[in-house]
Image 1 (spheres, rainbow, N blue to C red):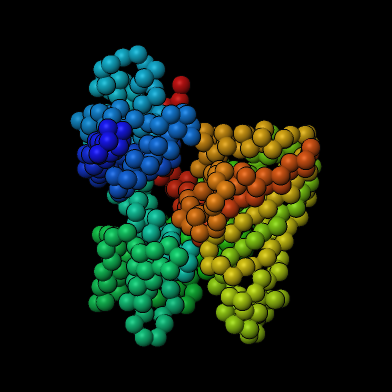
Image 2 (cartoon, rainbow, N blue to C red):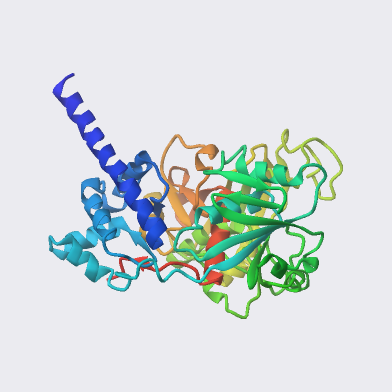
Length: 481
């Protein structure tokens, strides 16, 4: 083997070994201290050695150089000795701050930087808050996967039950199987068992009571040891204040979060944009729609930086369960035609719904939608007339920088690959991903193409709203400044 070939291989083997050494340390921090570690939003918990190395390489998008794992491993090793309390720690930012400090004493630096949680031994985790999923369809099952994945972290959310209508046959086993296997999102990461006698599903140790009911008000959650619960309504049946209030008639339920656009006076929340408008008095809140979540963060960035005079949003949307597989009767226009065989022109209220989260865009956006024969991942095309001129290069630089370090970095991602297609965005936790190569700019006219996983990305946004409502978000370190 030639020297250059051997050198590259040996370097890779060494870096892989360091990533493997990091895995049990990350796991220990997570399980014993309620500490979640990540790199610029890429969580490291329950990741493979390869995924950890990819997260380190991703750091070059922000710092212009790859984050050396030889530098982060000593940080993680020292973190495990400090008896930390609950926290979310960004290793990249911690590493940069350590380098800037000029000290060589890792322990002394970490003790000072994390002084609020040093010696807390896992304390500081939000008081566990019971969560109930009312409905267990596409979004309900993905929210369940996320909540189960967070069960032993600093998040205080605790999935306690799902409520569904009793179906014929082996209902419990079939619902567990749908959680275990997914044609779009792949297998569940872990173990699922069914307790037929107690009517429960146990997923990675999380005991989920399955409650059968035909309407919200007939459920008594306290009979199952559930109290002060937030009910996440995934059915979309009850969308106004009166309908959502039915959930609050259930014993043990105190708040409702709707995974569909709310009607009337219901607050429609897009996390990252207007979640701070939620008060403790808001017992009924909507997480808006997947498309509204994809559009609004990008629209806010554009409005704040360039100003939007007016615009049109065209959504190319994956088909959903409310369409027919083959031609049949449907109360909606065109949706009775086969979803698997046709592009279906349909209406969307998402453009108008943006104004509920971003009032300054009231009356400025129109919208329409085309349903296409793909099962997941959609695209929003924003055709905007701006209040000042820009160029494609300037606009893309702005959006890329905001996706990396801006206040909406969790919501807005950015990519400039010439080879990506819709399936590449399955599993994206961003509300939307700007396709930089597709951007078109002509003076004050800007056309943006935004990919979004209308199932998983939206579910991630719902959980963020849920964490905010229940004040169960862990403290983030390092602190600014």
